[in-house]
Length: 337
Image (cartoon, rainbow, N blue to C red; front, side, top):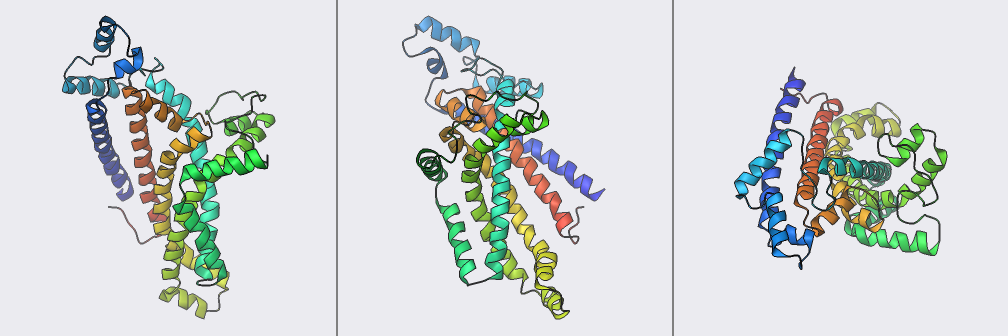
């Protein structure tokens, strides 16, 4: 019961974290010197209309009363109504979140398939030319801003070479697949809509590569550092003394322990992908939650901003919980009690 009790404690702490996130975000969105009503009805609207909308939105009540109403609705699964779209925020999030998850998962796959081999090669060939090449690529991914890389990719692969399609999830001439999960590529695969599948996958490559490269650099640097330390451990020298092949020593003995701090970085990187998706989705016209958050902030859409923040905090907390649980499988010496 040690692991399950640990999970229950973490879930209880997660509730407190989400409560704190809602409180801080609610206060911050109400202390900014901008009137959301004017953003909705316009600066030239008559004062009578402004006062009416102000009362309808409940903004005439004290701040603590507004927060109490918000929390009461939140406990009932009601995230409020978007000021801009006039739809329930939960409905908007259900519409836009799957596209972001699709992009983040694809970017995470790119980051792992690039970062893990680069980290292994960099550690095995320490201070030799493969190490220098891997470190340069990792440094470029970490240091270059996401928006700059996205613009370069668009200019080179879309405008100049024409190898990649333009912004968006699908080309205008492709019929979207029936909505099941909201992820275009997965829905097309589940419904055998092969035209939409290949077209959606083609559209996904460039934004996923942009996001994945930055995370791949972080993963490669962390894995290189961890693996270099592990390769000098006593049990690795013992494995080599037994005559085991170098491939078995590295992949079977050293890599598993070196992955423990790397898994932590992967979990944090996945949460960071949701933040990076704000810029990437805007540049690539990707209809995800990042683009929705950008529009919500510019339109002073307080309920939408609160909903996006709550979902992002929830995803962060769940990913961190999964990372902590994975430690027990990577290192049998770790026990939860």
